[in-house]
Structures are given as structure tokens and as C-alpha cells.
Length: 423
Image (cartoon, rainbow, N blue to C red):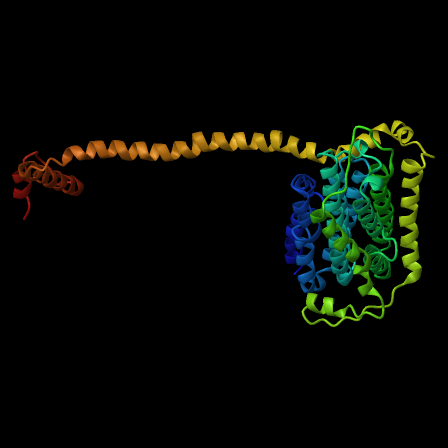
């Protein structure tokens, strides 16, 4: 059961972008923003998380090391991706690494036994992440395809609908009540601590701080920063703003299903195929801790990027190597390229040589022998009856002589002399 659990989890590691098979997901944000919203928020990447949840009976009956492994991978992915997002400048790439971090949240929730919290966060995340990806599309449209947040500024005044809806998405992912992300993150963190995973809880709490920081960094720079005179942004048409308003509404009220007066068991009942579940009341004490972590991240981003009380340039100048490592995503992509070009490329060259000179040599050698033998043997097939009779006669003579030598009775080359000595 444990081996099965580990092997099944290999699929979600790639499908849901868990470390170390995460490198494909940020590159998937290159497409149109509606496609990015579907891929990163509601469909493809969360399929791996959903698979683990649906197969939870298997993980639950396997050795505890299986779930602990899931929790460790998820927690590391969450904080790993969040740290990278701090140093990214492309608006969609920031959201892509945010998706990686939130997928880590969902995965470590399953590892600590909070499968309902994981699925709840999957649902709420779909609202506010799709909102922000479509909001990013609205911004890119208004900025004439510019995606670097440092090329933006003052967009809230020029694009009030996009600005307000994007702000709601940022508050939701930052875990600020009463937005949707607050309730799902609270359940995950509470279960992590209550189920005996203090380290995972601490990582999740710090990730919540980082999430609020880098999302507010994006918002303050792009929407609240100084206007760039070369830009002429404008609000997007209704075909773009109406979906933003709808998603913003659900980003606010989507988490209210977790309130004690709302029975959330219907969702878990469907998830667990009949497993009854009654959600406990919200632990407002622990929820307050996660809210404080989020507010600290928002406050730090405010002081650095809006109030300018702390210089971002001085921080980068003080830790240039750290910033460069984060900006280059820990050089994981470069490591993979080096492995592909050198190790895998070298192995491929050796296997190519083996295939050409050994495998092909054996096959071609057999074919050469067969072809040569056929050329020789076909000369015996003349189609003439007298030739076949002569061959038959000589074959009989040869066989007779072999038997005669074998018995030691051959005294003369004349076969009749031999026969004369036989009684």
C-alpha cells in the first residue's frame, strides 16, 4: 500500500507543479490570460491535488511516511515558490509562482490530514486566482502588452474596476477576513497544528506572510505607484470587466460556506464518497495569528513600495546574491538544462554509438551471412533432373563411405571388395 501511495503521488508532483517538477508551470503562463486563468486557477494544475484527495483512502491506510512525504513536499513547494515570487517583475510570472505556492498549500494540507481544507482552498483559490489572472490580462491590454510591473503605475485611477477587483483578489489570497482565502487558509493551518505538524504549520504561516508581501508589492507598484507619462492606460471593455466583477463577488463570499452555520459536509461527502464529516467551528485564536502574518506582509510591502520608508534598492544592494538567486529561480532551470545537455546528451551519444555499431552491426551481420549463404545455395538449384540425380548418387556414395569408415571395414577403394568380405 505504501509503495502504491508513493508511486501514485509521482503523478501529482508533475501535474500540480510540486518541487522538483515545477519548472513547466511558470512557463505555461505565456498564453492568453483566460487560458492562464483556467490552467493556473481552476482546472489542470489542481487535478493532481484532486487525485490525491480522491485516493485518500489509499494514503490513509499506507504507512504514515507517505502522508508525511506529501506534507513535506507541499510545504517546501509553498515556501520555495513564494520566495521566488518576491523577486519577479513580470505580472503574470508573479501570479504563476503564486499558483505554485498555493498548490503547495493544498498539497501539504492533504499531508497533514486536512483533505476538506485542501479541497476548500482549491475552490476558493479558483475564484481569486482566476480573478487576478484576468485582471492581469486587463492591465496588459491597457498597457499595450507591457507586463513588467515597473513599467506600470497609477493604474487604479485610470482603471477603477480592474483596480478594485484586483485589490479584492489580493486581499483574498493574503488571507484577510472576510475574503474567501482567509477561511480556507485558516482551516489548513489549524489542521496542521492540531494534527501534530508544528514545522509544517510554521512554514505555512511564514508562506502566508510572504504571499501577502509579494502580492501587495505587485499591487502597490502597478496600481498605486507613480504614473508613467509615456503610458496611456484606459479601463477595459465590459467583456473583460464583467467577469472580473463576478469573480470578485465570489472571492468575497466564497469562503462563507466555512462558517459554523453553514454545513460544509456536502462538499466533503461528495469528495470522500460517503464519508460523513461535520466541520468544527472556526478557531478564531489561530485564525487571528494567520491574519496577523498576512497583515505584517501587507504592512511591509506598504512601507517599502508605497510609503518608501524602507528603500527596496538598499535591500537589494545589501543582499545582491540572495536577490539574484531568487530572481533566477534558484537556477533550477539552468541545472536542468545542464543535465540535459551534458549528462543526458552524453548518455544519448553513447547509446547512439551502441545502437549504430553494436545493435545495427549484429543485425546487419546476420543479414550479410544470410544473403551470402543464399547466393551460394541458389547455385545448387539448377532445375535440371540429371544434375539432381548426379548429386543424389554422389551423396549416397559419401554416406556409404562414412558408414564404412565408421565400422573399420574399408580395405579398398573398391566398394565391391568391401561387400565381398561380408558374410
